[in-house]
Length: 341
Ligand code: LMR
Image 1 (cartoon, rainbow, N blue to C red):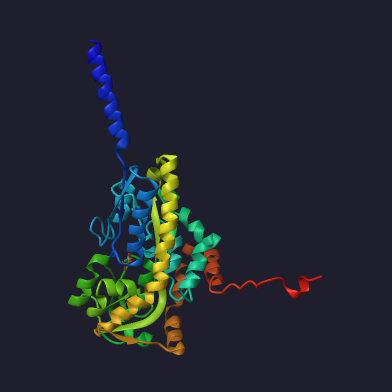
Image 2: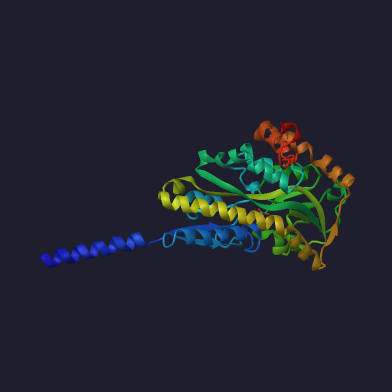
């Protein structure tokens, strides 16, 4: 009898040890290539999280819509089939209207202004804007400013008239192309190359990293460097899953999240020009550069879209974003003369 009970205890102990030894599996899914800013941030998150929490977590990164593509990934997150996502800010319309702010055309002067808004209190408030849907946000990752591409040169807004453009699942982007008298079509990212190649659509809007890594420049004759909008991401998790994690794991993952996001942002800011140079070096698509006056004409054509979405987004947010276009005055080094006694 003693032997049986000793064996049972040993068995229970070994079972509990093996249960404790199982790492928490964290699936991080996205739709772009490993070499893009988001792709590199996801891999960095894996590296840091597994280093900080050895044996406690196992991070599996799924790029290129391998696990879930657009449309399915948010549902999968809420069902617990994937733990971390970083969807483009254009893809949250079903969950909050506030994040639509990032799609307003010509709202931000450049990517630095986008960053200043994201780091402002109003920008950070958006991390909790989907709390009622069970989604928690951790940070923003840049990709870059978007540029139009098409099978003909787009120099004036009239050039876009009647063309079919692929858009992300965003009502603001739909309105943006309608303002140009063009035909927007919501198409999942994984299907864009095919849609451009086969002529299902005539054009698209993308940052350089996505153009180059998905070879869109090979199936588009012209890229207009319009910088008319931004394509950035919010890193999110299922709030219930996150809240249920042990405190030490949460701590390690929070640090990994912060460090990997900073890394992805650095990649975005430093490699945007490289992606552009590589896309143009292939000599497949021609670059169309706009003068300031030409850019203004695009801005004027699309600006009415702001009014359509102002009530949903909130004027306070739009004002805060506009404020971010003003560069902060650099602090003077040393003491000002008037301070001296
Ligand atoms: C797109 O659908 O164009 C982008 O959201 C893809 C991405 O994640 O950069």
